[in-house]
Length: 147
Image 1 (tube, rainbow, N blue to C red):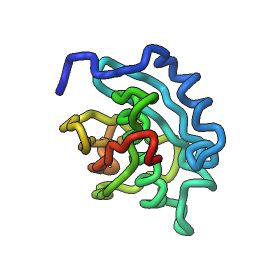
Image 2: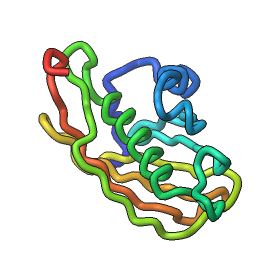
Image 3: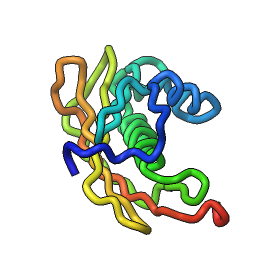
């Protein structure tokens, strides 16, 4: 999938996309969209009191929420919003290394863009670009009338 522009929408301004998440879990966790390339979406999330577990390490659930946020957003950018939406069907995550401070950065890339399902890989790294979590998200593509 690498290289070709895959988006069906024109306004891909990261600030506008972040504002679109204002009344969602993403806003509560401090997730912001930072970049949209031709075939990827990148977001970041702070490692702070909202996103750590009691041992002060990044909570695995926060990583999964970040992965689903950036992957679902990316999936929906490939669809015509007048006719279809993408919703999470399944997600998995391998947590590779702990993070105690700074930000984590998630990059979503498409592995398969089918008519009824999509598969996205989300790579989450720390501020030093070390792998923190590797996630795979399956999206169900449904008609707006069923949403």
